[in-house]
Image (cartoon, rainbow over all chains, first blue to last red):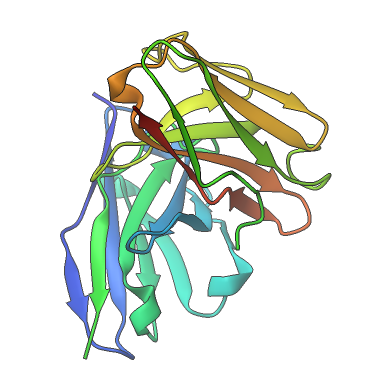
Length: 115
Length: 109
């Protein structure tokens, strides 16, 4: 079936970087966009940006410009989101979601930033 | 605070109709499709409504509407499994990105 499967939980120290993966299956990978959305504990959803899986083109939310990089490896149908210079307020559940409707979501990857 | 404004909570008894509002501006709801998501505790959000459409498998108890710079999600015949958080979202032409509402917690009494 159509699904997105994300990598496992991460614990990082402030200032470090994290790279989360999102592997797609059940559909033609390059025909869609992948968006990244995060949710801090007990908070709402926050959009981070998207990557066009065919061209590799990206669009990042202004808040994350300079700290986020979204890439993909079409040979293994996997998208990546790397966030650098981590701070404690980056502690959140990070989701990948397909297309502009967010019709399919990954299960989420918990990233904890703590000294 | 979120670009789109939702009430933090709503409630109803089984069988009742509950409506959740989502207020925005001309750069988002006023000119782009509004989508709605349901998030059950401890799970990823699920697409509930996109524009005026429901994905396959979503009960017709859920419906969406838009008027000007506001949108609404209606849940008719409320059921216990509808106890969840609900989020609206839309593309924003000024911010060049997706904006979300702060979420509404629906409690089935």
